[in-house]
Amino acid sequence: MQSFLRALIPTLLAAVSAGCLGMDRAGSLPKKTAIRSQSLHVLTDNRLAKDHELLVDLNRLKTEVTHQLELPDAQQQVVVYLFGDEKRYRDYLAKEYPTLPPRRAYFVGTSKELAVYTYWGDRIQEDLRHEYTHGVLHAALKEVPLWLDEGLAEYYELKGPPGQVNREYVARLGQQLSQGWAPSIERLETLLTVDQMRREDYREAWAWVHFMLHSSDATRDVLLAYLRDLRTEAQPVLLSARLRNEVPGIEARFASYVGSLGSVPVALSAAK
Ligand SMILES: [Zn+2]
Picture 1 (tube, protein in one colour):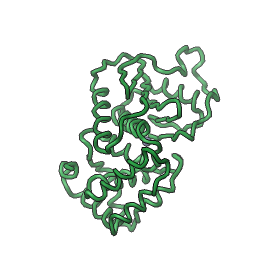
Picture 2: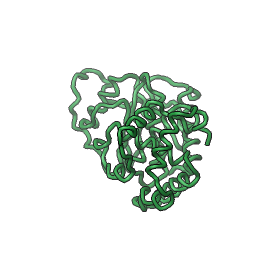
Picture 3: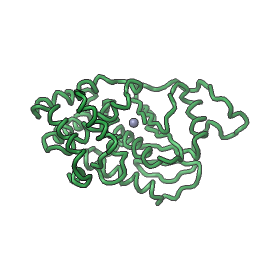
Picture 4: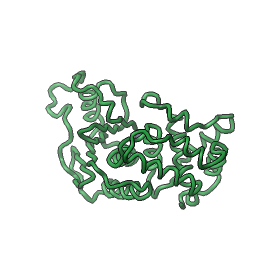
């Protein structure tokens, strides 16, 4: 569920892997190519047809992300390493990235490779969609602020056309608002490392993305202009400042929008 910016390359080869001695594949990457294109290369342990629904879905997702966010053509291929089971995946990560906390999937972006690591589990589609979204963003943009990176990945991980509503998030955010919670993009913008991102920050990031893309043309235009600047600048004018300039009373509008998500049919909020 996490992404790593290019500057945060984890230490390699600390070799703390244990309990896998004698297994000649332990710690190795999947090697069977399931699909390979200019933008996506999926390597698996077990054979996977190139027209498998998961792969078709990833290609569709890339088209949707690129179209909706008006991203330029990808400059880099995203490589997905899909391990056959959880143990293989965990062994590999323990060997290569011993300091990473356990997660079902990771996106690791370095100057050499944009890589997704995950395994064949119950939530494979959601995990692949989430991590591949990170990959699509990093393949097209110079930089992506952490909170926005995660907000967009949460937004696109939901199966179906863009704009799906995460009902659990909406319920929890509504509860927070009723208890006096004050949402703040400025606060999210101060989160710079993945270990600073708590579960509630993912929820809030998802909601700001949904709000910007679907509440009005003005908010969507602010996000798209910001993403355009991220093609060439690592640190353009902050998104929070742009929103404040263009949309008066942003927090009140956000709160009202989140409230409306809890009371309208999903199809309506996904219409835009
Ligand atoms: Zn993530």
